[in-house]
Length: 192
Image 1 (cartoon, helix red, strand yellow):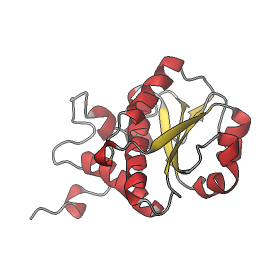
Image 2 (spheres, helix red, strand yellow):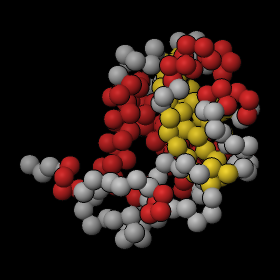
Image 3 (cartoon, helix red, strand yellow):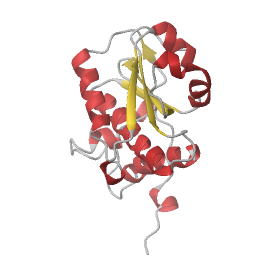
């Protein structure tokens, strides 16, 4: 089910990024710019995230769509570098990890997992829209759910489904120079 949630996030991001005639370099629409120009940051540098920006990023997650407006998520903001390094070993000073958890065991509640994936994408894109680097992680979820739930203060009955790392990035890095290649729209889009 975790693969389904990640596939849903990738599909949402991908569908918006392959629209015909809306190449990332061609769109001047400010609403589409963060969607078309996103990339998973690898080059984080030291530096704090402004609290007002962090609040906006989290608000984007809160405002994500969910099935029947259930909003089955909880967001845990990890600012402690020692705790963050237990989850993602290469965090640098100032990086923040936002753990998205949803009701259930994180594997079988498909609707809640998909809702968590939508909130994850909203957080990821909001961070980049504000000029920060962001990266989605799902690999650490088993370890978090197995041994770090109490350290993170996850609510009873919730399980981590994804996390977004947010931080400052090297100047001059953009979606063209840092993004991995994408498939051509003609190879993955079907019209019937």
